[in-house]
View 1 (cartoon, helix red, strand yellow):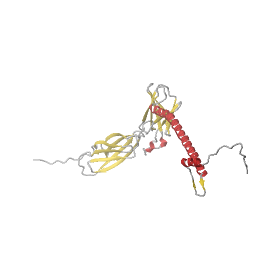
View 2 (tube, helix red, strand yellow; view 1 turned 135 degrees about the vertical axis):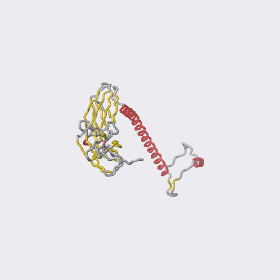
View 3 (cartoon, one colour; view 1 turned 45 degrees about the horizontal axis):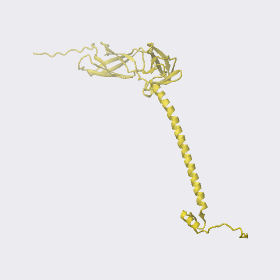
View 4 (cartoon, one colour; view 1 turned 180 degrees about the vertical axis):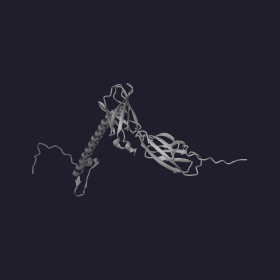
Length: 294
């Protein structure tokens, strides 16, 4: 013998297994199951989202007959903290959980440039990769002195650089740059950190490398310049010598030019020797031979 028993659904039970599936910068996907299996009618859920930073509340309504419900909460803020409460619309028992959205990314390409009595921090604009970041929000800069074990807040700026002065020789510093924290420091961006190892030289590792490259450039550039000047002078001298040889040859050719033949005539050494042999020998004049001048 057997009997079929149909349990009466209890709408006063809370939703089951409420948890977060995925969290982004401005959204969160939450999931839960109905208070009992296989509901035979649509069930109305109330999803309350409490902003723990701003102290504000929002309520969303979800109507479905599915046993498993997945819902996306939108229009959240990066780095925010929220308390999510899910219950049936008849104000039954509730299920709750806390979620934290993903904060803004850290600024890229943080670097240090060393000057005479101060350093400059440079970084790329966060707005280049974060559509939710406005430059008017700005950045805040912190410094940690490892020797003194002290962290100091240096200030904030809306620019992409920051000047730091009054650094002590022999101290090691760590600088962090992040999107400015909102609401009493409860909503911040991820920090970008850079170590400045002074060690009495006033340079960090990156600055030292740039300094060494600058010294090498200071030696190589003048040498290359002198080589170029020397090559230029050599080309000028060769050109002037070529011009002189060309002019000399032209003058020589013009002096042997025959207008009758229309060409220059050059005699070989043999011809000159033959002419000298055939020419009569000129002898001296005798004292008793009178000289007649016509």
